[in-house]
Length: 266
Image (cartoon, rainbow, N blue to C red; front, side, top):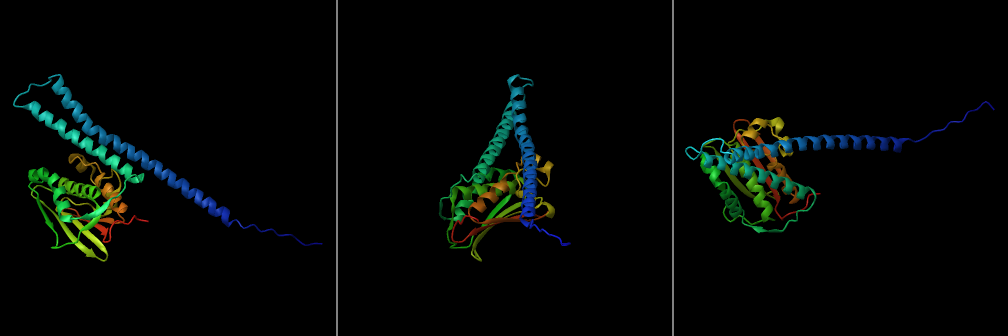
């Protein structure tokens, strides 16, 4: 009778589903690119020390040069140092894989923070002495124990102190300070007078194999896994890690542990 029929369809859910699908596709593409980049860096990091080991071992095996003045002892030292770098890289990869897979279980106990710092720094003693680095700690008297997993805490400090030593110039300083109570957190800071990191690269240092200065990292045998591992372990404790740095001045890494002990981050 001259009228018309109108039909309206609510497509909100369909568009939302399409948007979610596109977002998932983009995330998958980013993850795939990240995996490719990770494997590319990984192959480089593994090849560098391995090539050194094979090259010097071949020289010694085939006696390509004369052993004048203890030259072979020097080559053996290069092989040993490259082997240590390779082992540390593999250990870091395994540790990060365990944390990401949820296979790391914390066993928090009350810890004397000063003793843990001292034990961790002793492992870097030879490197500190060889570079003339002045190491110091500042822990308030009668500081309460820190509730944390001892193995993880040692890993955190060894990685931070090792990283600081690599990028601190000869005769520089590394200091660890403890602040037992800051708004419900137990704060520990590791400060060095190293080369520093550009402001725009600060967040990248928590990404595996990402170096703000690639050439510098290669010269100092940096793997790029130390800070990402520290971040994973801190988050496992329900804490956090932050970094502040000035190029040519130094870097400060701040660790914030929940004062009441590990609480798995949401």
